[in-house]
Image: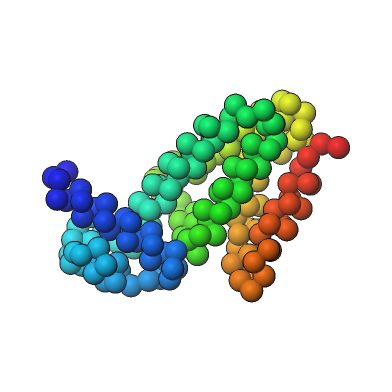
Length: 179
């Protein structure tokens, strides 16, 4: 990609990220392009539709969650590492008001790869916590990710109660611990 095209791409992703945080995923694409300092045609050349733009933002954020899991894998307390990572996944999801649920509802090849990366990262943390005897056997990372998403959705529906996510996440965490 040419240097100017890469700059436009990066600016569009950053503006989209900020717009999704502030206004949710239904923000006008024209506004994102304008704030990035490009025309709507430039946005559509990089991202042919809203979903492609949301997907690109999500993938960039997924890289950070994957890196976080890689750092946490060697933590002294495996259960704590898993829960810190799940809270990071939840915080990421909550920050983008609708982005994760919109993208996770899709089932194309790109999202299957993203889901696989999340499951791999979190699965390693879960396996380590189970091997340490801190987390119940039979729990799967896919279930924990769905539970985390459900808690985020519930918290999004109750914005006046800012502690909803923390309370529900604590209940879920306590439910999977051994003894």
